[in-house]
Amino acid sequence: MPTIGQQKVDTLTITAVFIAVAATAALSLAWPVLMPWSFLGLGAAALFFYWVSRWEISLWAWVWVLSYGLLNWPNWRIEVTGFFNMTVPRFIFVAAVLAFLLHFMLRRRPVRFDRGLLWAMLFLTAYCAVSATLTGWVAQTPEVRAAPYFRFLSAMLFPFIMFFLVYNSTRNERQIHWALLLLSIYGWYAIYIGYLQYTAIIGFGQARSLIWPACINDSTVGIHFDRARGAFGAAGPQSVLLVVLFYADLLLIRKIRGLYRAALIVQAALIPPAIFFTGIRAAYLAFALCGIVWCLWASRRRFGGVKLALASLAVLVAAVMLWGNLTQTKRQTGGVAQREPIVARYILLKQTWEMVKQRPLTGVGFGHFVDAQQAIRRDPSRLVGLSTGVLVEHNLFLNMVAETGIIGLAGSLLVFWLVYRQSVQLYRKLPEGVTGILSREFVVLFWIVLVNYLTTAMFRDTLWAIFSNGMFWSLAGLVAGYNRLLEPHAANSLADASAVPG
Image 1 (cartoon, rainbow, N blue to C red):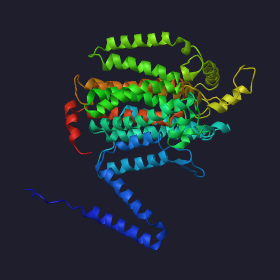
Image 2 (cartoon, one colour):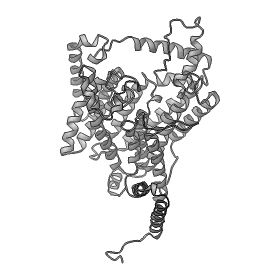
Image 3 (cartoon, one colour):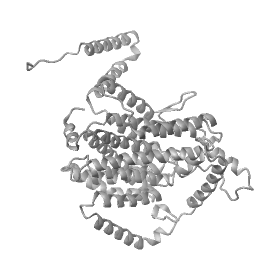
Image 4 (cartoon, rainbow, N blue to C red):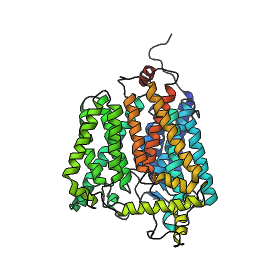
């Protein structure tokens, strides 16, 4: 019979702690210059191992994702000869992978590779790696020299790894709360930066003095300095974040009560203007399409059709009232009639078709679109009137078919289809009326994230956007993980599991 007050003593843990402290003290005595950093490092290591063994491990995925919007500063990097530069988010990714692996070992969690989706992702990753190996991991065009290895590692391999880790660590619905909570907290910072940037763009330049860190104000870093790009190097990731954040707020507003709910209502009201400040037309379209999805599926029992009709009427009235602004080319005042990007995409479509005709099955090589583009331009008899300078493909799927051929395009489409299939299976397993956050509304939120991502991918090559890929695939890992958990159990048993310590 257990005795109150008795504690289980882990001799191995105590021994390990003693050895670590003794080693740190010995190093500090031998090299006093290490003080106090040696003991600070010991404390950080202790915190790390405590997190691995006790705290919610899936938080590491969101810390990594959000670090691209907070800690990806251009002057914080270490150059490594023969390797890509190490930045703060990349160090966090390494720490996250180590934390997950230690968590699986210490908690004796099984690691599964039991989804067709995982095999499809493995095939696509391996195929792109082979393509880049055969054609070169470094592009010949100086402006996009890092395209093959940067896009493969940062925007494909790393997010896929995080998907796999999150999928295997999914246990209870509380993990959704943590993910959306961190997203909403970062959202306040993103909105704050976006409003200040737009204020500076329309003529109040002193507003930039209130932006932290100051490197965000560097116009030589990234693109879209004339738009509210947040803490990112372009306005695209900011717009993707804000669209997702708006509907995540709507979900949380339904599921929680109290002061936090009131704060989320305020945040949701601030988001539509912030999306407008980005000046990304794809974001306007994505926001509208996601609204249709939300009204038709998440609000079916709450007058979803009426809400959609009223929202459509409001958009129509606003378009009529602001028609003068919409038909001009200045993005800062709402203009969507800028023709140069449309012409550029038409040119890219013609170039992509030329590449596909040359190598329809395997493409010109992963990351080598611009190299092949330059070769096309040197033959003026084939294509006339092409723009000058480097112009990367602005469509994920056109880029995949150009660089990796029909095989790569088919692999990409298969991966997105299978992740959608996982979400549909989860949606059908969840009964209507579930009050917890793991509900059909959460699956609808994932569909919104998917629509947002794919809409963006139709106008930009999202393999350049690490943040967008990391956020999408980390959330997809949760969806696939819950779908696996609900296969042998009822939905209510998973809700009860939320009381189990992480």
